[in-house]
Length: 402
Ligand SMILES: Cc1ncc(COP(=O)(O)O)c(C=O)c1O
Image 1: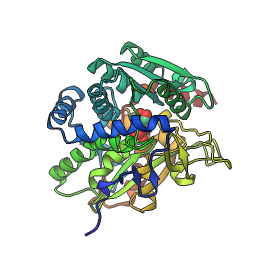
Image 2 (image 1 turned 60 degrees about the vertical axis):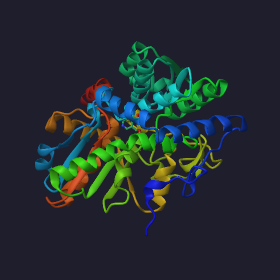
Image 3 (image 1 turned 60 degrees about the horizontal axis):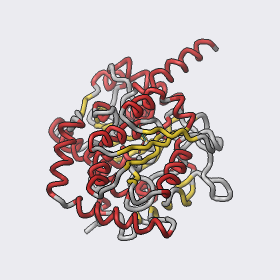
């Protein structure tokens, strides 16, 4: 019988050749403890009951699977469905795993949740659940992202979190992760690293994947009910890769094609994109072995995307494995195409998507007309675009000035 791709990773936290736990010796025990506690609560009826109840009554799950009729008619070809993670409390998929992380941290007696954020969606989601369960919260964010995502910064502060402005390196997501790791090392006993995606040392890619896989579980049931069959394609954007694996995981053993969409940024020149799986090579970053955009010394390269949440030179090890296995295809969409999809969905369906999610939409907009009307595509609409409105309006105003 064929092995299920859903069962990964192995005991050392490897998905094929990727993942693992490259950590200073003094942190080894902490991560082993987190793994042990997670495996306990994974099978604990009371924990799962509390988590499910909060997903339903606090987050607002299940999120709808919406048939985008206007967009489908306009494009011709395949039917496009949107998995509406943008309708979750706090406006993105990030709440699915932060809620699980917060409950786990509380159970382990931790005092504080700490993490990095790019677009601010993860930071807002973590600050929210910290308030919910009664933990302190500290969020590290690059100076550039702080300027770009001012609304999310204000929200984090209102929710009671401390926002640390990161001024080192490129002042974006990778530097925020570096800074948060450094802060974590100072006090790993009391602090829980509420990592923002399926990245970092084992067991975090597994934990975040498991909590996010609610997205695909729901979508599978919903499409079977609405169409009586599985979809032909799943499409999701890939930063670290949590919303993508969240949608894909439940379908990995089915005959469903999957496309992960990376940011091609301004161009494929070094420093102008973050297309890790398209142009990177395996290397080490943030305690894991994975595809990485790196310079000749193996150091992470500067990256760029119009979407702060995709601005990361690494990627979750599960995606590196799925790429090499040929199970998922990884494409890239540039800043202009993503902006075009952002504007298109807003006008045609009355839904303003996050710039991150707009990368997945742009891929669907390219693909749908090449397929027949019998084909089905599900796009993970990972977040809403409220946080991006000021930034986009600014770009549009400047474009008219040229
Ligand atoms: C709305 C939204 N979608 C996608 C992402 C990318 O993260 P991931 O690849 O982990 O889903 C982010 C990150 O901030 C986000 O805010």
